Image (tube, rainbow, N blue to C red; front, side, top):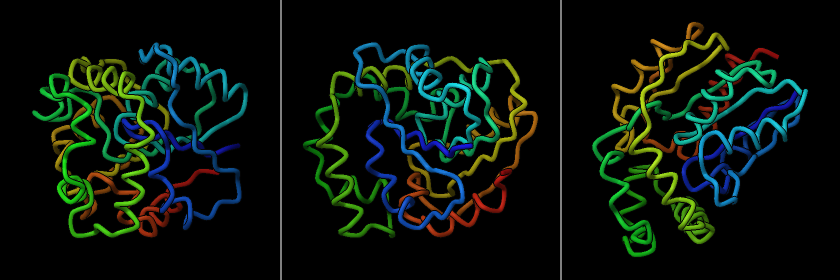
Length: 222
């Protein structure tokens, strides 16, 4: 058994650091960055994850963009998934920002003032430590690949296949990037779903790592 963390659209896994510091687990925990291959299709990304996992049973903790990957992994049923924790995830364009994001130059991430980005992502939980991590994540970005991921976000079609893996969906009340309507899709497609509503921003695992660690342990099926 292993717990795998799949990151948001930046793909680096750097932003998991606050959560990793406080999350205690009796089973190994692995942050799995997204592939840097030029092929950023969902199919290629999940195939790489499947090959890396092999026959080992896993629990997936996924953030934002990687919810698309976790759903596809569960739908394909080629690896043994014990449970999925979705944090601020979506299975269709997550908001108006998500729909128009494909037309915005991704290098704006290097231009937007850090205080503006920090407010959008962290709100009142912003701190020098989180801002520094955000800067590191942005510096690590492969802009060609992240542009492809943004296009996927903007154009993804709502799926229809129901999955029966035990799932927990965590929704933030102050999420500026993923609208609340996205929960309904998970309620329709996850036959074994628990829902948690948390006062937080989109960056749940970064701004409230202790609380999210406790929440995960409440549901862990080891």
